[in-house]
Image (cartoon, rainbow, N blue to C red; front, side, top):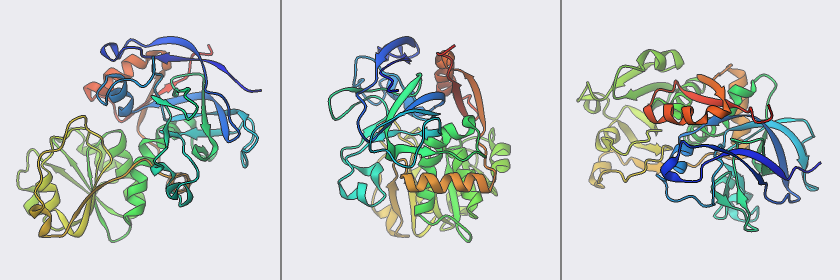
Length: 354
């Protein structure tokens, strides 16, 4: 049976971004390629904070129900949906729609579709609002719904839908594996996944942070080296040319980019997955000439990559470091994220039904 009217925790004013209000609203109209999911749990992503606080700009709709690390059961499917069944446990990430016709969509790069639609704070192709997973139900095109292995619990799978996939994609595409040295900059929700995945893929992992507070955690996650960049001002000289790849998940733009670039070998890459609200410091091309290194970015991941990530998680029994709380406490989760006290992901358990 198609679900139309649902409930979710919404923010209506970016100046009051912790004032969540339980509201009733209509999901966008179900289409032939759509799957509707009853939410079991949803991770709390930094994107949620950036959106509801106005850091990334004004809200796209009159109110915003955030959340794009969603796990739940299928309750309705459009006529074109194949390979899924009612009652199946699935995940939904940061994107819920694409055109399906462009070159990215036809080459397993659907996350780069020029007409792609975010799971929340977006307007669907028919002009209706898109709302997210701090709610009872979410609707997404089937290509953005991921089947979950039984071996991974819902609470652990939730943050894989965004944080996990966002770092797994550039690790995979840039050849992280045996014989490679990979640096992880920023040990948070994304960064802790990057350490675990890179280590599981066989790479030698260097964890970078501005203090020693997360050193023991990083080593337990699989890092072989830990660098406190604030305490060791000469880290770039000591690691000159050593790394093949750096994944930066830092949410701050205040980074010593020139130093990090020096640690890369010939044609090494610094890939950004964190999205600061401010611009990076000025950078000269001469800085990159000595080793021919590259600066790039990456956006979530494809359905094909999501399947590979889940296989890796099962094979190596990878479990994110999470804390859970009722969804009604979303404000507390956002505040903890803002203060940097989360170790390393908060997952909200849907409680609206109760």
